[in-house]
Amino acid sequence: MASECGFTDAHYKALQQLQRDFGPYHFNVLGFPCNQFGQQEPNSDRDIESFIRKNYNVSFPMFSKIAVSGNGANTAFKYLIESSGKEPNWNFWKYLIGPDGKVIDAWGPTVSVEEIKPHITNVVRKLILKKKEEL
Image 1: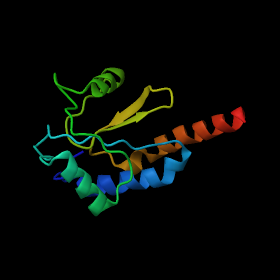
Image 2 (image 1 turned 30 degrees about the vertical axis):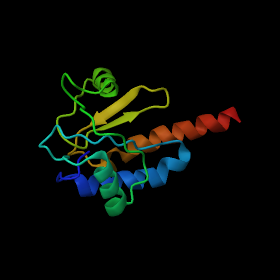
Image 3 (image 1 turned 180 degrees about the vertical axis):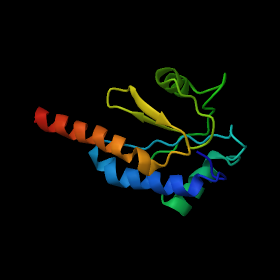
Image 4 (image 1 turned 180 degrees about the horizontal axis):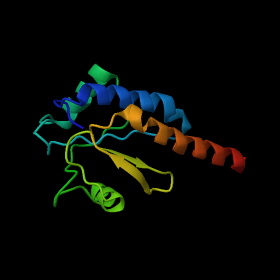
């Protein structure tokens, strides 16, 4: 994620909508700011937090700025890359992770959140049905 990227506006709005739509059903968007691609996130963690809350009313968790690819990639992203075979090459890379912690799929920034929403809906639906069976 990056504050100064051409994908910023559309992605933050759509990701926040996902959080509103699916958050009550044990789904969460998690944001990881990164300055590796085009130096489009030069801001401090505090400034990033202020920017997204003020401009997009973001309510999903945002983590500290990290590296998401290459040798210095954060351990979590090394796992995501290894599991999916897909490494981020620009801002707003998206991974869908199932309740079991396994990567279901990954998409680059040119794939809109709306395009992947059916995949998310399917995961959430299965989770809801599983919870109902357990009752």
